[in-house]
Length: 269
Image (cartoon, rainbow, N blue to C red; front, side, top):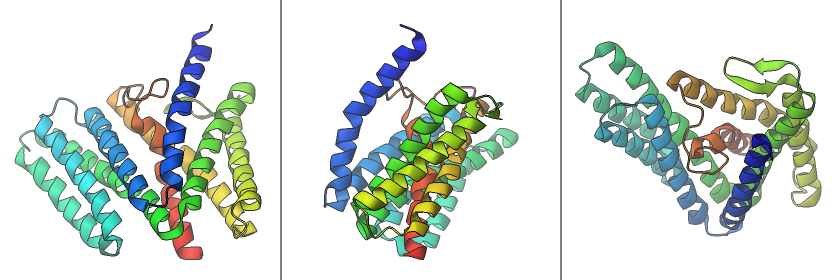
């Protein structure tokens, strides 16, 4: 068996184990279920992020960034109306963490930028999914996850079959324009099927907007994480999911798509 085929089988096996658990929590009426899952995911993703961007730094410093990011997530979930206050508090907390050990000024500046970004990127964006679940229902969370999955899967298979033109060769050599179009088509298909099958209130405009915007934001989220990994000189953010790499490798696109779907529902419905 070729290495690519073996890796694909491992990826499928991991998905078959994880998806039922995620599905139960998504469709469970108790909103704290998905909130707890996302908290665990946020902590692990932040650990992977700090391991990449703050390698060699004391564990206490990296742990502090993880705790601030998790704290931002929880604050946004429980009191989202105070979002500006929570972002301000998180900014100050991270700044103080870095200032305590700012003895190597050029490197300290880079750490400050990375730590602030990581807290907002993971702790801030991931809060959108449990808020979407609590405020608008499980179907919207399922739609965000399904669109992200469809986009990624469509891009993978179409890119492997027909990919010729590299999308961002420096960041992600495997991504192609053809794969991007295939992923976009797959995402649109999911939004229209969702509207016909279990979300009849989803208008044509909603289906097109969510499908198209997610088809752009999903790959953008993937490329953002690729940029972080390339800068850190690593292939995967971690090894927590066999065949998939780390947690951050699996949620990079969903962070962007989930945040957009939450904004879309909040502003336009």
